[in-house]
Image (cartoon, rainbow over the protein chains, first blue to last red):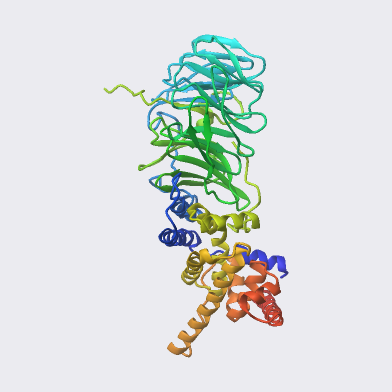
Length: 402
Length: 189
């Protein structure tokens, strides 16, 4: 037995109950720390408890090799294992989904019925779900949810990432590298920035203000009519997502390695918007961030993480909120995206390797797993690629009773 | 968004975070950041817990020992010198307490029943069964140096400082322990 073999044995010999011990230990240590430490800072407080709760379920996940799949799953599924329903027959939590697939975007009604909108590559809801902004090569279109086109404009460059403003009056989109804004009736198309690195994000307050990342890696907030800059700060390196939260008072920035929340201070029109010091969310050291999103009320951040495990990978969903951190789920393999329901009570998480969508309760309740997702959005084709959820709409839409 | 994780990780084994990040976490934990403390915990718990278990061979005791070490870290956080690495300080507490626990248990067993055998190693998966059985036949001081050298990868000089032993003693314990382990694993495994 050489040194390498000995090291391997020492590292891999199972420790009974390791996961649970880690969980209990963090609770005890965090409590002791809370009792001694000074008052916590105001933004996203009590993340110590956060990680306590997070590792709590992580502990379950870190049980010895060969654990059954049920050992990986959090407590959101009744039987421990998501017993997947064979097909999408309703949208758990209600509302309508907009789903981008290799064939184009689909609108999914609350009863699970689906309609393909056409040969578009990317789409997003208008704020009340009355229209969809859809991109196809160098064209931006507004279409009704039944697929009826209302208008189209051509752009210089490939159109992507259309985002309808919360007021409903404007659509921001990327054309090639440029960031542009057009009125909701297809008029007044104009450029805001020469280049942008990620999808733009509208202020949730209904003001015509747009956050984006420019080609030099600066987060900028601009007035969408004039293009006038209102504030600038250096973005998180490698940023891939930008989103407003907490009623427009913070910006979330996510990269593969980190998620941070940056407070914003609104000044006078002349002063613009001030960027505060960002606060990062405590994530496992070696985990990769695959997605992150604010809840609709902007008070909770959901983070989808992946890390290598036993020569494969595992994925986790954590919630960071005012009351601490909660780990919703851990599964083997890779989860690819997450989306909040309009009322914030559910999270849709995509699990391509299992061909499932997982509908997780953000609060109390049980989760549901629905299988057959690829087939549902690529019927009768060999089109590759798991569908992506482009939006979950809208708070006001309910199924009529009776 | 994103791609797969970076560094490989086997069976939950964690490499320590880079020194620069660890210093930052310690500094922020000293300033009241619960996130930083939790990140420190997350980065170090598994190695500390495993080290304790490999010395004491008792899951409950290992958990208590690792937990006590972290509580001691919390108690001493304000006085901790950030220029020093956190892990050796934590591991020193863990391993010394683990050795003490084994000695205490041996005395207690001897007092209760002089004829009693040492506790067998807990039932482990086949992968570690031979190793745990062999480690159980070593005195706790030898188990500790094996764990510090080959699990936590400290140099004999560092181990000597952690256990407050002459370096020659560390080397001789290590040599005897490895010789014995090789015999036990090859003969019995």
